Amino acid sequence: MVTFLAGGTGTPKLLAGAAEVFDPAETTVVANTGDDVELGGHLVCPDVDTVLFSEGGVLDTGRWWGIADDTTETDDELHRLADAAGLESGPRYLDDSAQTSGRDIARWRRFSGVAEFMEIGDRDRAVHITRTSLLDEGHSLTDVTRTLADAFALDCSLLPMSDDPVATLVHTDEGTMHFQEYWVHRRADPVVQDVEFRGADDARITDAVTDALSEPIVVGPSNPITSIGPMLALDGFTDALESTPVVAVSPFVEDTVFSGPAADLMAGVGYDPSTAGVADAYPFADAFVLDDDDGTDLGRPVVRTDTRIDGPDDAERVARAVETALSEVS
Image 1 (cartoon, rainbow, N blue to C red):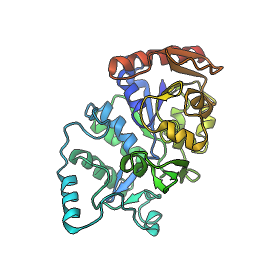
Image 2 (spheres, helix red, strand yellow):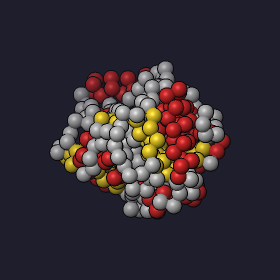
Image 3 (cartoon, helix red, strand yellow):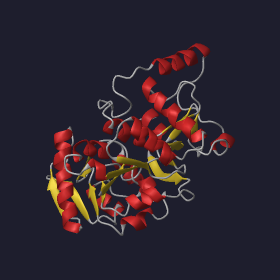
Image 4 (cartoon, rainbow, N blue to C red):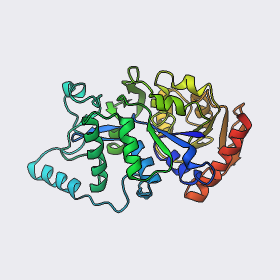
């Protein structure tokens, strides 16, 4: 049995080849939900859905977002209506009272659907409608995720990090904004000053996640701050990691990040944007998988390989390095 912690695109890319190394039937993926937003009344879970669509064989791997070859007629019409009516595009937060009232999924992440700032494909939207409707019927996010995983015929077990809402908010030189506004709408342009996981103090990990964290853990090459950070902010999560073997794959080669805003976010919260900084962020990690060209001395067991993942063969190579690292610390 093995459990992967997943967020962003790094860990899903690794999972694309991990099935050749780790039996999917004995693999659990715990996905970050700090990036979730309620857009036009529908709960969008980007990191859960990246795993859902990738493992279900329908992910748009050109963007690592949404469903391949999806149509966008609803999204196109939303923008046409806004333009025709003279409505302002971009993120349209609902007012403060709406951020903490209404359905339980609200937690400082609610946006109007007018001229939606995240392009949602038509088949993709059907997933969000189904998810939100099942939540409205009284099902937990864990149960709903399992239902959707069955619909996409996943071989592994997929769990949200919590059934409770957590919002990743980025404090910048231009004000505080949800991570999706910072990354999707602003393209990581504002200067990061801090990152907050609003709601994490009240959120709880589920029994299913607790069980999953008792197995050996793989922290994939995801963003340490906004992909893994929301999980670590949950009470008991880090304690669980300290009690089981943990191998982490660095998303950096020394001080060069493979992709995404990890470097800016790490610097913004006080970590060195490098492999050394990742190690500082993961004191619970027993071993690391680093790139062949990464000479960082971490004072912990290290297995080196080519960690660039451009396809399943690359992912299998990195997964085998993870397997070797786990064998050294288990």
